Length: 362
Image 1 (spheres, rainbow, N blue to C red):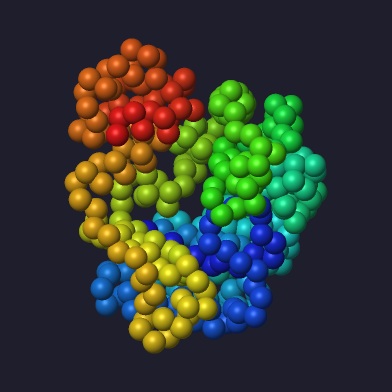
Image 2: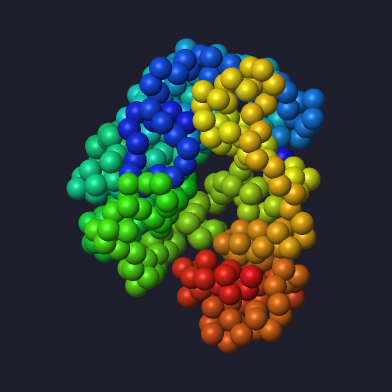
């Protein structure tokens, strides 16, 4: 089982991001993190917390918590879930929210992996993406994490973003490789509802072109695999022994517990989602111990579709039991899939079309 903790605070709201987030405003970070711990207390009577193997602090920007608040929260977390039993504890971080001293605090508090939200090393693109850091700050923050001896560091990058060219995408990729991180995530920009970018897409200011997506995807695959990274999932590349254990849990169908506003849990095929409102979340946890907002039971067909969508993104592929044999064979003839006795997986050609393939097989 895996634990996800959602911390929704961001100093600036990125125009492409659809995750639940907001500026810190008047919310007490101390009271908020206490609410997280209280929700976890409520869960421990229903879930065996000793089975948790990885912890992921996401957001939002969890790295913006003050050193004192962060320390108190992590100590409270460790009191409830022994960190010695964890295979991986990940923190999402924005380059503008920490320095070397704070990076050392991350290490002291048990963080074993930091996912650094860089998105681009090109100044013009950072501005368009609404990022509040510079190229230089991103490089410095990476170096701070290395000096603090964080065991594993991931760099997040985005492609097919507005104003990006093949040349500028290559610039970001090569800069990332030069830093020699343990892991690189390359996400294709998607225009999500309720974002500023989505409105610009509807207005025709921004476009989503399949040829560009495929070209940028292929460029990342070529450059990063040549640099020694294993392209083990559609958007993820890792050096030896550095694959994300937490994310593999999702892709492989492991159970997961989510705490915090908007966080999702899936236990025994029962999926719940917390209320996506920080103030209401804190109020409900204070009164009830939980803030469950939605609930659904995944029947066999819903489970099949989810397994298909997630497993096919990985190099190990998807069980043949989840798809029609004739449909799989047709896609093999098209050069989009390969198969073994038990699984089918995308070819290099099919990897960048995984969403369309899943839609066809569904």
